[in-house]
Image (cartoon, rainbow, N blue to C red):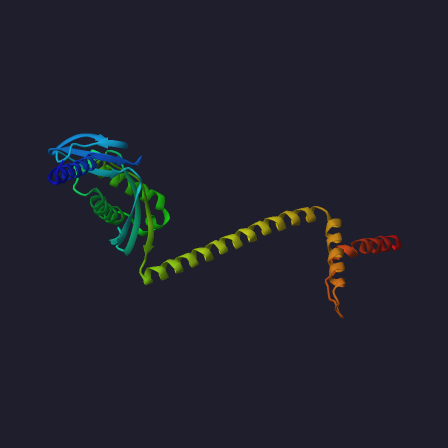
Length: 259
């Protein structure tokens, strides 16, 4: 075999290796191959080893893993005319690789833009108090709205979370004053409830004591004991007339006998 034949053989083998390499693809478990044969879509293949017709087939790899999409901060005016800045995070995955390639030009960019506009629309229909207090409800509304629009693209939105809500300084001060006023109101209500319960107990105690004069005397003597326990040089206390009632009755009996 002459040198020219060796060179030709080498060139042929080289091109065969290139063609064979372009005809073989290996797709991972989370990947699918969207194949266009002469521009026409054929059934999706993968995972594993797949064979393509060189020059005729063109493959587009699509990942089926969950994608975490960070929505940049958006300027939003709420229903009660409060200007806020809100950002969020969207979790979605491709469930139909062929539709994700055929139905939309760039499904990542399209989903990002859709999430931004939906975030502004949904929050613009909500009041600030609802946004701060009912975060789960807002997240669910965002997820349902975005998922409805991405379903024709073969994309499933599983979760949307509002991350941060940046309020103007004036609004932060107003909310702080409102929270302080609410705490003061609760403190006053608790104090009034305690006073009411104490007055009820005192009323019950007065009824019990009034029904038994001896109970009143025992209570008076107990008070004297408590006062005497303190180190006071002089103690002034009133004496109930009921303590002298037995002596007064004896005096009255003595006078009657004399008469």
